[in-house]
Amino acid sequence: MADINQNRLQQVSTYQKAEIAVLLNANVGIHMANKTFKDFENKTANLGDTVTFEKAYRSVTTAGLVISTSPIIQRVQSLRCCQSANTSSAYSAQQFIFNVDKYMSEIGRSRILELGTLPESDILKNFTSSVTVINPQDPLNGQLIDPASGPYRFYGDGNTPIESYGQLAQAVANFRDYGAATHDMEAIIPMTIVPAIIRSGLTEFAQNRNNKDAYTWELGPFAGFTWSESNMLPIHIAGTAGQTSTTLTLVSTNDPSGANVTQLTFSSSLGNDISAIKNGDLMVFDDGVSGQPNMRYLTFTGHIPCSQPVQFRAVGDAESIGGQVTINIYPPLVSQSGITDQNLNNSLAAGMQVSVMNSHKAGAIMSGKPLYLAMPRLNDQAPFSTVTTTDPETGVSIRHYWGAMFGQNVSSYVWDVIWGSTLIAENCMRILIPLTQ
Image 1 (tube, rainbow, N blue to C red):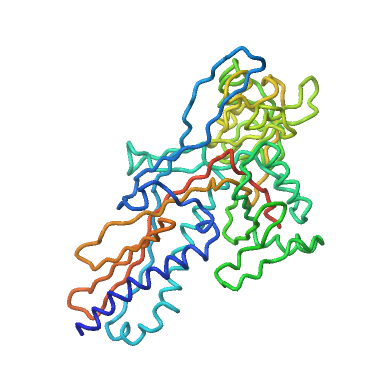
Image 2: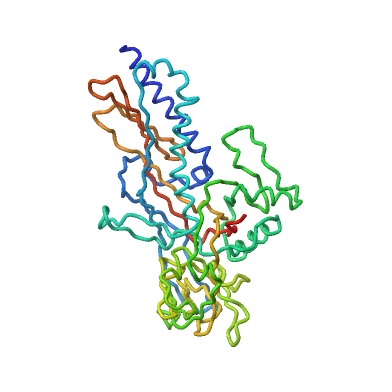
């Protein structure tokens, strides 16, 4: 029996490396996420631990030869390991011994595929709303919303089906027009819309026949992007304004100077409605409003007006009281010239109108590896035998621990992980697919 127990320990360590490969390759979100953090993958972490990474610097250019310096502002975003999951099983000594040859091919693989669905689906939720994370000042009860995580720009309206290459090409064009990184260009769409897109007739969108079964979600390149499919993309249920196509009319902002508008107050026909706006609702300033200019974004780099209408995302729910609703938004809308965060071609003014998008399933376009994921090492579960294996390239870790129940011929085996994720807002765009599609 001593030899069998020794072999079991070696096998678990070996199996874990294969389990990590399954976790990485069978889940498109985990696979494509940026998992490189300085030293973070090498430490033993706990729920609530945080890593911070640097975002791109921004600056302004002044016409002429008269120098006008602008400050250097370091832009950072934090990622907090605030999620956890486990799967477990129990065997008698005889069951484990007689089934050890099937362990990785059947038992271990099935457990890891099941375990992977929870972090995978949670990671993809970055497409629909601001990430909710544990408040470090109150880790047991408090939560914070990170408004800088998740797309604020979008393609589609939640009503019009996405079913052609032309629509995908237009989404890519809109994404690039605003300004985007030109490397690691990736997109994820629901697998249910792929047949309609293929039927649209462009044979260039052919499935990548990779011999590796784990890569069945790869569709191949189109319009400069690698397109993948998933059956775990999140659904966003819009508030009443989005579901009823209610027009919102701007009344006021929290910053009349236009230097940092993070809150907008609108009037509408909603009356009293506690569900007027939901966290993650997407909105756009309407064109052709009488007496009002069309609102356009400035390019993220260069601050030049582009063709993209001003879109933004609700941060938190907002209630309509007497037909008036005040919404916290991201990104800050800045019309004041000469500052690095200026993004509007005109000042905001009362009377401008906004449309709210309907409920939808969310795909995404991204570039520059903006989806960050941390799955660090967990500590040993003494007195239980523990093996924790970390992939040296990605930093993804799985912990496996086991032990016998005292006085019984039963051993329990547990696989578990912790993780945190975030998505840099300016480097992504949401694709809105109708719920009926």
